Length: 613
Image: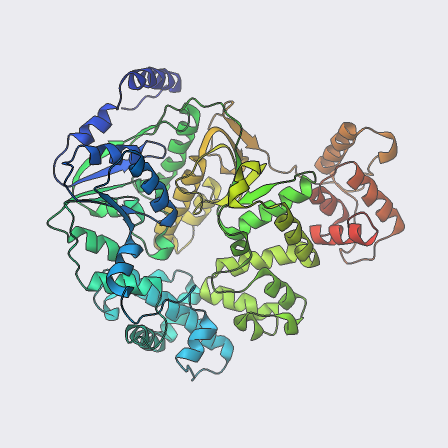
């Protein structure tokens, strides 16, 4: 049902909330519980899909064998607790990989690789030669690893059946793969063969693929497949071939955010009877309206129809506060900015292992990139970066492999330079463990790590896609090839927004045009436009803090002093002004702009003149 008038819509949603609270289950849930045969459920964020699956399992005969397939280990643990609470002892909870492990690895001579293979390891394991430089061999090895991953996650029987080139979207990277395709494919076969024969350690992707190729028959009467929108084709193939079981697949079409791991939206590929759960009990009507508006951006890509999200949440709590970013490095940048601008913060928490935020998937650390940037090759530990003579070579590697993580690392290094070790040390000192998560004044997470979670207050980083960016992409010649990736970027923003229960803080550039906000949404304004130089800041010694910050803000709106070079020596006058700005709480961002230097240069100077320890 569609309402043009938002006030009428909100009134209807409030009446629906009252009605649903009087009933144990909504009409949508009742329809699912009364269903027979194979079904699929499209469940929006916060709609109670796990609760529905528990109740579905309760309706089945006590002696029936039920398998609940969870998306990952943390979801598996949570599901075990919930199903156990309802004394559903006939339900077995597994992940796709735990099932595959039991069937393929347990009792075999296979040894599992801890972490992923790195390009330099592959060059050695496969005795790769033939290229003019090690640098080029590492690029080829990078593509071998990706091609092997694509095959292992696919439902293909042979490597020749997959189209790896289609997944390489950057034009320069694609040209490189085309030129070296025979070499990449040949070494991919060798790599897979070595794992198959147990000559080298196997990856998690590999034993899942071997499980799929074995055509297993699972001994269950019902199989409940959660987070179906991010299933790998390999696991979906196993699921669909269980002809003796009644199958239920549940997920949210718009929460598909793992296509980079070659996942597919199974809900769109499975032709079961379809049900919807579109009432969200997590957040209220305004956040629901924004989520709908974000999803509506998909109309810029293709004709799009979606079930409308109805927000029935009523929470006003402000206890848990989370910052969510699109990428690991985007989050790290946000965390660094947060601790430098909020110097009194005592406790913070990162979802997942904090150290993982300082490493790229291939193993390079932020410290390695910094040492390359500073030309200190003897301190570089990563085998890949050791082969590079300069940042120029790193930029070339990034371009030919589409490695966005290394790009973000390089961006952080350019911004903070030699202050990075001290900043990371501060974050680690303030970070609390899992058992003390409740002490954290703020939680940091990427979208992928906080999937399935919720917080009272959510603040978004500004590394998500925007309507303006999508409009620019539409004008690019490669737009048609980029549509799926752009759609997933919209999904990432949708997932991030729908983690909030009572308050969402969002950069104004992420808000679609003409969207009206209310008290449940707080806009983070863009920095003021800075023009017209030659205005001198006021004397900080005689003004109160609030007035000073107002003066600084006014100054930024008009302009700043000219500075001929960011690399000029600091003067005594600048040092005095820097100290006063620091004492009055001016942010590093504002100081950096004022002095036309990086944040790292500002912090380094503060440390040198004894202001920072």
